[in-house]
Image (tube, rainbow, N blue to C red; front, side, top):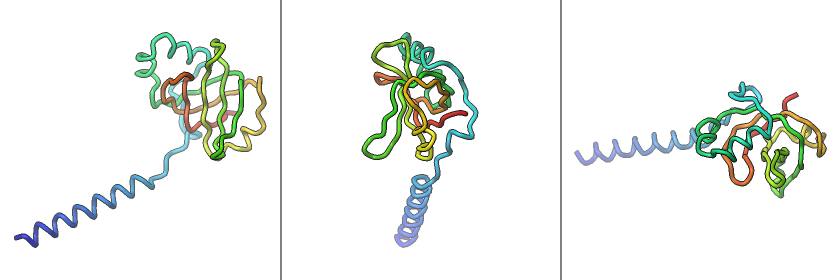
Length: 138
């Protein structure tokens, strides 16, 4: 009896570890091939979060959004992750777009004050509205 329980526990443990490894190494789908749920300007997106963050989170959180705006800055951090900040009507804050790893060549060709369209997944608002896994739309 004890041996059957031990074998059952071992099999369940191995299956659990296998499933965990599968989920950990499962590739994340890129945003390039996904259709945006919403399309708007950076100022409009920021204004919705600034006016009612709770309602904006319910509407936009984890959704693919196509945002159009003027580039305020382009940065490359120490981990070689590229990000773009889009201007909004706020003098201090904007829409922060963390780029997909394969977007390096597209980002390097962008300068401040360029008008661009970026598609990414909204993860909410810190001081800026944050979009992750972004790609530049042509």
